[in-house]
Length: 161
Image: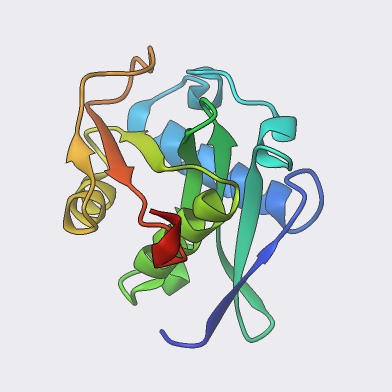
């Protein structure tokens, strides 16, 4: 699927809440009755500037994806809440979203990004590995994660190295 455009969106304003609710429902269906969104805790404010961002992906007028970045430290951001609606899956949207989130993290000044994922998100795991993420020791206490990874971000301007 080509022609996806990503734009900043407040995580508490439409269409972000619908995307976040769909993602949450999918995780509950996959893992059982728990609230993964609280493991580890994440507030909407963390997905806003100055340390965070939430992106919404659109194909034409259709909202197809969303995801965020939050601050872990001055140099490290964390990719959170990546979600692609089922109708847009297997079309490269997740890879485009991941690149857009890496770009947002770079724009926020992060030198690397981290993420985690669970054992039932095999497509996500495959994407992260193919996108250059390297497995690291657990950096949070997410009881449902089986994979923690980090990727060094290249500066957008090569002279920034």
